[in-house]
Length: 101
Image (tube, rainbow, N blue to C red; front, side):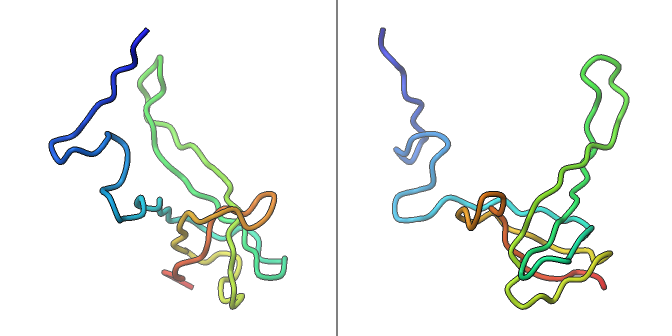
């Protein structure tokens, strides 16, 4: 069995960043639902997807634990978070900015 590697026009493998650059980190916008921990916030991210069978647009929610170094976000704030290296058992995101208090 031979595995085919997909190569782009630039010569890099598909799904990887160009040589010398780190891959783009995911960013999500959501609402802070808890800020009771030290330097940690819980962010609820909502996305709209079509139901696989019925095709109705439904809202799907995910909770992300994010690192908030300065403890600037409070419950109810709209925030922007970015993917980062694992900081603890659950934290893999960091606070980029508070969009709305």
